[in-house]
Image (cartoon, rainbow, N blue to C red; front, top):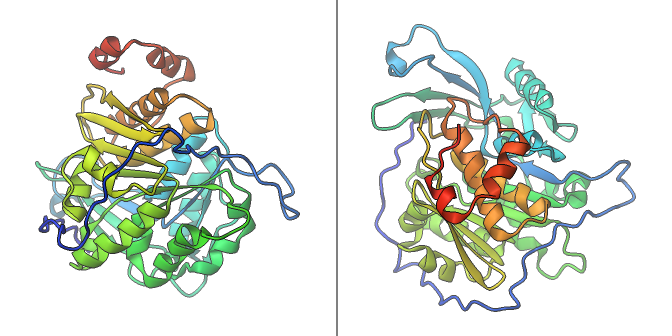
Length: 364
């Protein structure tokens, strides 16, 4: 399905933002591991849930229609986060459903090679693994999805009871899963909204809005309502300033934080300008690094992974945002969806810079 991401009118008539009161007692979730009877080994630091597909892309910048040869890789927002976190040294797992086909075997092999635990992935013998194509263009790379009735679209709320999810320190999901089928939307609702009233709260839940207009089949009102409910129910929310404006009519990061007031941590990304977090009663802004852009796909996933790595490492808010920027910059410099992160000695050097040096320094 081609990505027809035409802008929609602001939905202020649908959703009224509440004023966000910065409270000193605002909790920043502490991702403590949970041990249960069916946990034979140490739990994952993070379990990422969502669809991963085979990706066919041209070897150069010419449009897809002019290409005689395509290369195959894998791609999925949630597994991108898992791969980047594994590359940063954390125990990352990915949970989903795949078909019984060569594409599935390629996905499992590549994720395993990147250090991601795929032992909880389910195989569906009756439905295929999804596929998408990248189509380079001067203004941006477009994507064409062939994922209708894929194995992953049959994920449902029963997956929320899987031990891998209960034992994780963090569970990460995105709005893409909410858009691909009703049963996947029910799964996200069970993981996020369904936690209300539970005696044991469970893992920290991280939610990336990841709005893909074409996946919602033009129903912008439904997308705005569902993604808002999920974002407000999560512990940590990532959203782009532009996608929040398109969905909810919010313009400034402060407006977005006010709208998502119920979420303990809100992180607003504003492309090349920077990222702002609202956590622990404080507003923290860190500018983006000056970076040459080779391919923008995957940068948002890398940012989320870097930020979550900082959370797992108990770093302060500024360092979490900086790790997010470093991971995003690495993704922007490659045509692949998953970046090769610089050595931790190099990231440590960037984290130690003062604010002026940070803003003026481009990573190699």
